[in-house]
Image (cartoon, rainbow, N blue to C red; front, side, top):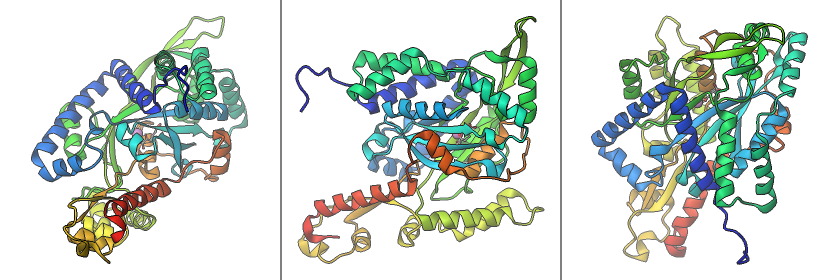
Length: 461
Ligand code: OOG
Ligand code: NI
């Protein structure tokens, strides 16, 4: 029992909310196009809600209605195992845990990643802020000398301020932060993710790392892991993509993920290319500083659909493989539409075939016991007593992530690396295993079934 003398702690959900808002404010100041993107998404979403009464009803019924307006994800790229371990502890203060393992080496991007995000129903509906967090894989750099040099440069930097580290220790010792401590923590943590104009290396070192891989230069040459994009959520990504082009944001040509459907599944994303930013390079002691430019930061939007079961995901991966290996003389969009005909586009079919996850609620209390006795869940849904709400996909897609990375690395298509998946070393660096996203959806669905069962007494389902 908490004693009367214990200072009240701010909840992690609240700290995450404040952090996400502060980060958005900072990014808007640093990357003006992000402000344009936010306005555009707000307009598109308002139109989508006005024109689609089913969407309005669905959102009102679900636990998501409140969260969508300030829903977003960000991405950072880290250089060392120690940075990843500390970031994991920092994000734990914000109630975010590592979910999923993404190997991007197969797509020629020398990183592996996880997504830090809230996991409980309540935390997700409070604020679902996520951060796609990649760790550079120096082991994939062929040039030994360059690899050593990069490791040495990275070993010299400390991406967190002493203030942030001290508050992290206080949080871990007292299992919470008071209001003033939480505010100070958010402010200190934001500093880590801002753009630092001054590089930690001279111009020629930067050029060498850039030539090895643009991504290596982006991670190694700067003081910290600048947030490289913040992504608002839209209800209609096709409309948003058109609007991006209309307002002069050079959107990438192809929307990543599944094709447009009546019932959205997983995740669709599109981005616009990076900004050119001014960089001041170290003069190396003797020479004067050199002014240069670096491109790393960009804008992205996403539309989220229903989370898929393992069977659903296997079918998705199959359709994607089908489309990719299809006739190259046919355009990408047509190949995708054709391949995805195999994926049912109807919520009942997705549920009855066990392809997607749902959250069940009691829609209309039964009039009599007889109505629910011996009825299975599907019958209760068919008779309107129970409502099945699609569970939103909260994670990322490796193929899409690779596409997003590529589009912001000057479109340079890299070859796949020979060695790939290094999950074990990633988890070792992280200091823990990542959570399995499918199990989280499965648990959320199961919990909702148990709630329905309790609400209907011991009669069903
Ligand atoms: C991350 C790219 C992945 C997404 O939404 O799939 C990503 C990066 O470029 O650092 O953010
Ligand atoms: Ni992203």
